[in-house]
Image (cartoon, rainbow, N blue to C red; front, side, top):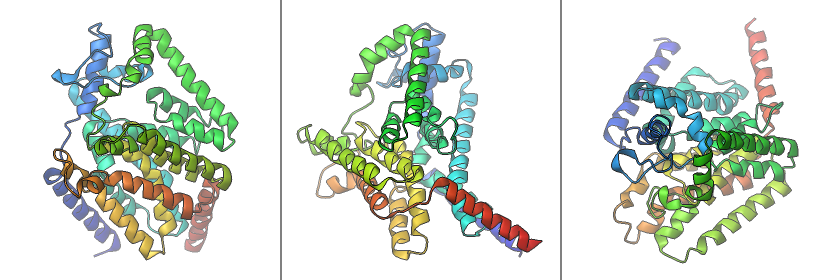
Length: 389
């Protein structure tokens, strides 16, 4: 059997194993969030209803994003359900492929390793990794926003536009504007801020009533998003809510983590690849609500940690254990009965892993600049071609 045939067999066997896992272990989310998006914009644009009064299929869940997000999703109003599902799956798959191309392929190229089989296996890994798995299953947008933000690493001329658009669609990416300011990238920060403001102004002009409702009422009502103590909320706020301690513990924890992040950015002056990765971890920790599928913002950090751990078996083993835990749905063991000695560490597993990732990246990882890594990969590629000739 040739090497190519063996690689095909390995990928096929892995695909069968992943398919068996997906149909037996995790909960299928039935594209619930996509249904919320589609139902809300249909109710708003076709039925003339209030965007933020809509509730999906008799549940308590409605549209929670800024009005610009509803404008961006407006094609869903005239899209059939099968087409909407196909579009959501396709866009998320494309986002995964881009992340693999941007973060994983340079690691393989820099070491002269094969490309296609590892990338195919990694794509299957994304379907097992719970945050990305749930993003597909819910029909969520976080992978797309992650691509918008990380695209600014490659967009030197218009750096900040992707962050600005992402921040106008969902508030979490605003933290990246803070990073740009701390990193003294004032032009990119200004571009991001102006882009976000322009998109928000466009929404205000197109949908003044929805904008007024969101910015004066809905944005402040965290109860519309869900119960803060729900086990899926893997942020510092979720930890405090599940502990049933004074809510002041949360801003104290957030202040501590943000102060550490500010100190690291200002004193260590990381390159933007590392800076964006760490900022993504920070966003998950400090957000009032970080559902499990929001943890796709950890993905750049996991790629960097993998690249920095090659050759170090101990660190690779630690990373592997973390990935297994984050693919196991372990926190859901306490979704109904968060009691007993194991409830506190177990129900907050992903928070502890996020904190560990933050510390490992900021203390141990030293990454070259994005340009240097790409240039090194191109040099190795030329050397291999010259050798083949």
